[in-house]
Length: 237
Image (tube, rainbow, N blue to C red; front, side, top):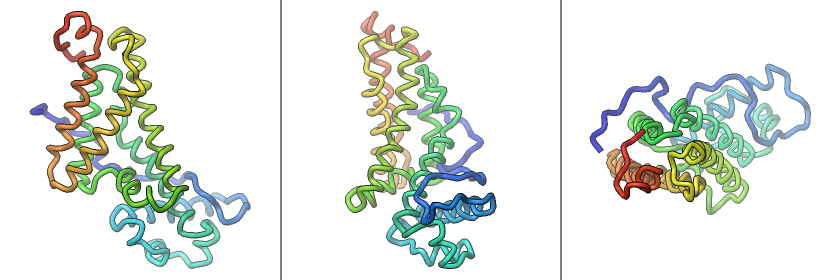
């Protein structure tokens, strides 16, 4: 609980986007030019920022047009409606949330690595107390937009899969009990993060997410091979 949290180069859940195409549904089947891709990416990035600040309901297409200095015809050239734009925002936010956790996320293949990743999550929340963009989108859209819910579920599954891959490395290397289920443990970690961030946002304190992560990581630590062999807590390695 009193671990010193190190500093990181990326300070927020969202990172500076590059001019590359992200997912979503185009209003036309015409292949985009490089200029068209850049315009579309700029619209999605601006919409993602507005939605993270105001929510989906609080962000109109006119708000996006004003922020990007685009016309209504330009906006509808790339997106059939607001729902299509929101889906593109979800896909962008999935990429940004995963990227913001690097390199700690893909290096979480030991107890020490998992704790470094947990510290990374805490730092991200310290710098943007609004919480994880995916969690905020899920709380707003899960009951009202089945397509958005499916996209968010897929995004969370990617996040869980990255954690599970690291836990599987630990299991294969003998650091984790052979009977441990990496997917289940990864789901527990992700649930701890999202639940902890929600409570942290309400409390205006990182204490809930710190506690949730510590408990989830201690649960994994109890399943390490050395703990199973000795019946005692293992040393982080």
